[in-house]
Length: 173
Image 1 (cartoon, rainbow, N blue to C red):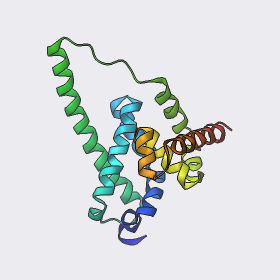
Image 2 (cartoon, helix red, strand yellow):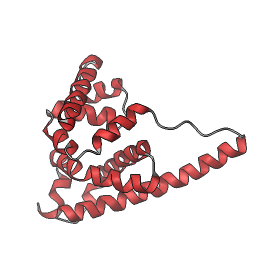
Image 3 (spheres, rainbow, N blue to C red):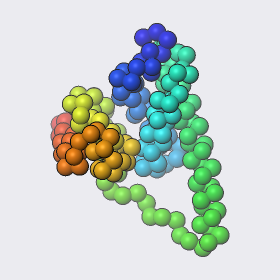
Image 4 (tube, rainbow, N blue to C red):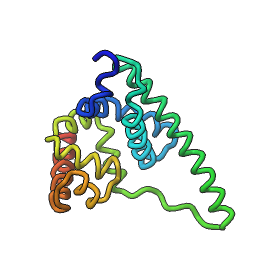
């Protein structure tokens, strides 16, 4: 699509996410070594890209990836700066650092790293895909997922549960 139109169109932006999210996650994970942080920073990268999509001047998937990697690099640098300040404050206060990430996030990361994960995610019904993106990728509370999607909390939980079950079954098949 010429002129970066995939990034300009909100519907097509989902395809950009599916195509590039895993590359960004690996890029960030290799540099920070923390899967939970990598997931958060990928979410932040796509949020910034969505906000700034009008600035994209490329026209190819390779140019999209380069632009997204530049945003991811910036997000990673900001994270390191914040983390350095946070660590210094904890040291001054004599407080231990928080414990490592939770096993559920590690399981999601493990599933996401499998080759078929992006393909299976893209094949989910749109309402399930959006629910799992909000809950897992954006780490939104179920209440926020429900509000964003305009559904009840129970419906949001059901959509996320079905999506994760489908992902686990299909990716491991």
